[in-house]
Length: 478
Ligand code: NDP
Image (cartoon, rainbow, N blue to C red; front, side, top):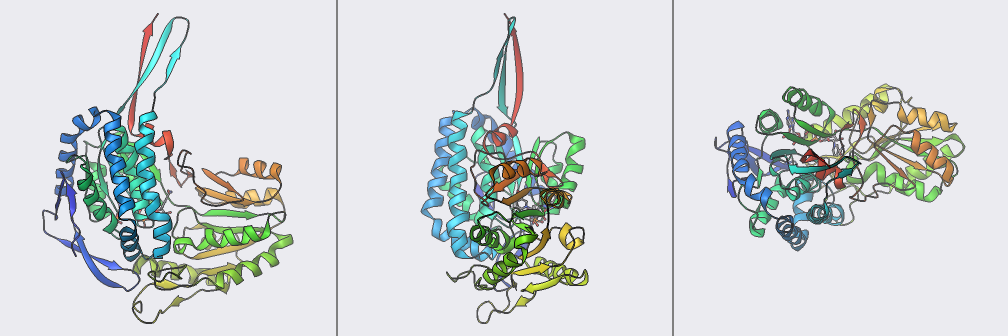
């Protein structure tokens, strides 16, 4: 099967006719190919988006909204098929794709399609003047998304851009291009005008870099690794482009002794191993108050051992395949590093062979490590796999200091039944997001993003819509 670029309303191969292999992570087998596009395809996409911009931006927001809502309905219509495709392409359990990824993709489209109709700008009145601010769509914007939540994060970026009147050139990860390709067909069916959304497949260093470098692109919305984010910032900053960078994390999960123990254990297992731990919001450093440390570790390990790892197509599977051979090896290297650093692997720690269809797939047992200090590499670097480290703490101050003791600052989770303590600790955590007694409970209106090396800017709600606009203040003397 061939995946095609979506440029100026048509599906087409790369102009150079080159292809990249697309591998199913659960089997390690090539099952489709995608265009190995380059700067000339990006240029075509940008020209198409520039030509489409005026009429799309001038379309009344209700009309833009109606088209985006049609796309959301088509995602719902094809939900089962899309979930199968996402699972095959990414390695995640089909049940997870069906219950989280695909419903969230249509929710993203619907949320921003309707939000844009309620978007308003500010007006400031004083004794001698009225100031009013206009917010006009920026133009052609670049949206670059990663492989862990492919259609979920792809739509999370393009929906606000399109809803507010920008035209878009987008690049999904070359490791998971399938659902973005299927999405382009839905856009055609929904009647999205040619050139409004363009999807160019291929490698980040070629396609992504060409998008970021292009002078006609005033803004880049990027989700991915911190190293790539740095490279994008270095390219874009001298051109004064607007940047939204959602990057990596090393998220703390703090468990106080006065928590709801069963809830804390079961949600912590989810926040550790959902999507094979390949979610930027997973809590990879678990800090447990010493009073309940042994009890927590025992219960956590017992639950972890019962997680079925296997064929993503199997409805019973909770942990599927790691997304690529390279990432699989990276995770195994980190497990070896943890051992060298003195860590005790109390659960998992090895690659697994799944017999039958998935013999050549990339599977790793959910892994729990004890006995490492917060400062070691295992606890400082993003592993982005089914690997967590559990550490004890004695006081609230120590927990806060350990939690804040990394270069990252994306999300934190904390567990306590003491409301005052919960607010106090949340206020002191240097992260963009804090979950109290829950994890990944999302309201799409809230600001989403991280501090420190986890990124710059916020997505979600008005933040996302504002990002894709240029404000202009107009002052009228009374
Ligand atoms: P990468 O940074 O490797 O890639 C992200 C995207 O950027 C891909 O589409 C990639 O293309 C592209 N890209 C690579 N190089 C460039 C470049 N020079 N210019 C422009 N685009 C480029 O991240 P991963 O795909 O490995 O995703 C995992 C990372 O994403 C983790 O660090 C994770 O924490 C982070 N993430 C952050 C989230 C957040 O909201 N903060 C959410 C989800 C993930 P290609 O794949 O073709 O190389």
